[in-house]
Length: 401
Image 1 (cartoon, rainbow, N blue to C red):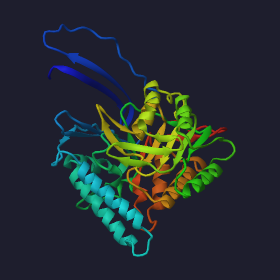
Image 2: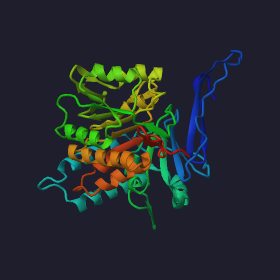
Image 3: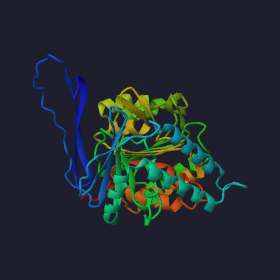
Image 4: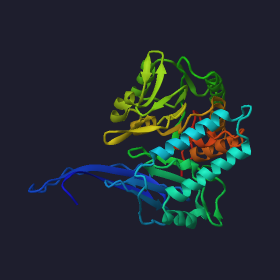
């Protein structure tokens, strides 16, 4: 509609399942003759879809308004939605700060009791559902609710903490928070669609000064994975982590450490200096992980946080996923170390031992942790990937649809 450089994006869906995307730029200037560009293509690795999967696509327009579109067996029209304050960052940060304080107080003498903490969480979730999701999209969701098996959020993840939504409209109420009712996963633009997570090996990042529970977490994980998964050791230096990633990481990379998040972004203090998402730039733009599709579990405070960086978002999740990671798990706000250990152990038990899908394993881990002394850590985890993806350890093969 106007001159300049524009990005054109085409996305493919099979019912509610995202299949792939193609992005290209086109320049339009007055008085310049049109000319054909080179053909652009993008592979669709599979046309398989997962019955009951619904995708909520959230896009931010040039005018600052957001477009919400629910995609399922029915393709609903996009709904435009403008935040009253223009930006949700202030409200989101206040919520995260409250949840951080609630997590710190959980189980402590004089801390908030479990019933009161749950009630407060529910009220936060109901208010978010009512004010951050357009009326039309909420109505569409209830039309689909009877046969939805998972929800994938594609697009602007920092608009709303989706895992905190508590669907309630009059007499219509789901089975609790969206993320305890259904598997809720996220997807970033440019992320590969991966349905199998090959866990042939595992490496662990535990730099000096990590929480005391970190070593116990790694010990439990090693026991859970067993001898069939090659142990690549514990990494404490930034150079060793970067080398492993740039060379094409296989299997699992599990972080058990502190992550510092500020307005300048994230960083982990390693033995040889700070490690931050820009250190993944080479891997991201070379596609270093696109042939191996590793699982990245970043079990650290606010490891799913993102900041704006020129024309894109910068954070651990988008950098790893655009590099080709098969799935990424991180946290939205600071969490308790003991709760983080329990969530990780339950998640791996479900994914590896029980053979559950990524979506179901994360859902079951949340449910196992939700009555943990009023601690909201079970809602802090953001899971990026295909909800139907399954782990394949040596000697096994993940089921395919």
